[in-house]
Length: 263
Image 1: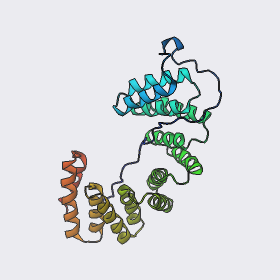
Image 2: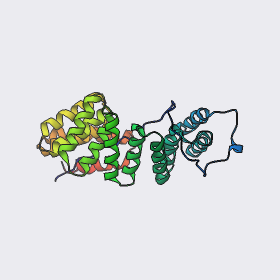
Image 3: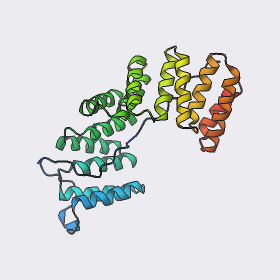
Image 4: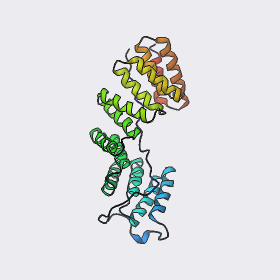
C-alpha cells in the first residue's frame, strides 16, 4: 500500500509589530470611532501596545477595539492596521483582515510584513496565486525572510511544482537552519522527487533538532516503507503514534495507527 507524506503546517501570522512605522498622509477613515470616545491621555502607540497585550491573551475583539482607537488618533498608522488585521484574521474575519493589510500597504508600501501576513490570509481562503504574489513582493523587499520562502515553498509543493518548492526550502533552511519543520517539508519534496536517501537525512535532522516532532517520524516511516525498510518504518510509526497521542492530536494518531496495521 502506498502512503502519502503529511505536509507540516504553514507558518501563520507570526509577525506582530511593537514599534512605529513611518506613515504618509491619506484621506480620513469614516468608519472608525469618533474622537469623543477616545481617552485623550492615551496615545495611538499606547492603544496599540494595549491591543497587542489583549491579542496575546486571545481577546481578539478587545484588541480590535484598541486598534480602532489608535486609528482614530492616527488614521495613517500602518502598525495599527497590520495588528488589527492579525486580530481580525484570528477572529475569523478574513475579508476584514485583507482590507486592513491592503490599507497598511497604502501607507507603507515597503512593508514586507504586511505582504507576508496578507499572503497568510490569502492562503487560508484558498487564494494560492494571490498568496504567492504577496510572498514574491515580500521577498523582493526582504530577501532574507526565511518563513516567506518556507510558506511559498509549501504552496509550490501543493501545486506540484517540486523544483520551485525545493529551491525555496533550500533558501529557508540556509537562512534558518534551526527550524525543524523546514527539514520535514523539504524531506517530503525530496522523496516525491525520487531522492529518498536525501529525504531520510532531512527527517533525521529534523528529529535531531526537535526529538518530539511527530511529523518527522511519520514521514520518515513512510519513506522507509517505500524503500522496504519495514522494521525501521514500524519503529518510526510507533514513535510517531506515541507522540501524537501525548500531544492530543487524535486525527494524526488515528492515521498513524491505520498505517501501522498495514506493515
